[in-house]
Image (cartoon, rainbow, N blue to C red; front, side, top):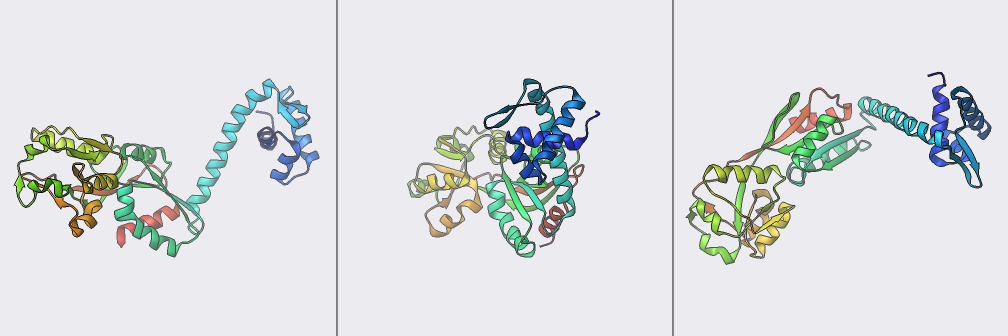
Length: 295
């Protein structure tokens, strides 16, 4: 590569905005300097990159091919620089966490509040996705760490720290009072209109595995995307909800719902902090992780 990298930087900005003037403003240099850099690049690579139009400039067919590669390379370098700065900056850095609605609501929020009070200039992004996707993002290095619930497949380089227990229960409203104040056979689940999460979640997977181990086949009446909605359906007597207890706590206390008990209980699961030891973590990320582990 004979061309100066600075020429490619100018080329990237001119191609992106279609204007020499706008590119000059973005880069805080003069328009003649932009024009000269483009001319030098064209001389070095031996071809025309832009055509003048009434509104500015546009890429030649050859220029479009070059821009595709330059754009990818320049933005990768810019992302690398940003990541490098984030790794060093504890006062103005950025943290990316992977978490579900449940782990955010019933574990992370108080810690994030304390962390924000202590480091108000650090930006915290929370990526919300099913556990398998969150763990994939962790391995790609697009998040600093994840807070997810078991079970999941433990990959190489993954460190798992359990932080609290999760109790999965069945809840029902007054229309199902025949189930109340007694222990029902687990097989009764096959006869009930069950409301539960969709199959792409760790919670649903653990329930199906537990019931399958005891010879019970659950065919839900409703499969929903969120646990909050399961509780709302159960409150309206649309079925018996299968949900992590935290989501139903308020309605259990008010008496709008009760726990439907069976002769075998779904085992508690762990909520875990998951890190990938092969990916570097920002200083800001390490500070939040320390807070999660010590408070």
